[in-house]
Length: 47
Image (tube, rainbow, N blue to C red):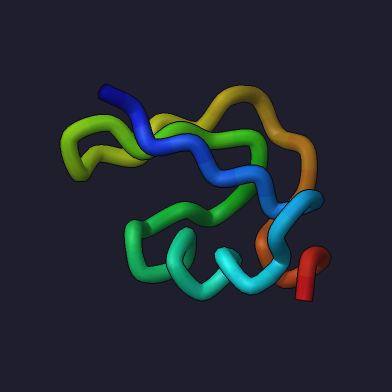
């Protein structure tokens, strides 16, 4: 099952997303693989 990370609701999870390999949002982490969906914002913009 995909891991859903809603950084707008919980900015503390940005580090978790970085560790998983997420570079931009929106993205899904499925079985350890990162799937970027279009490009909304880089993770740096969320810090």
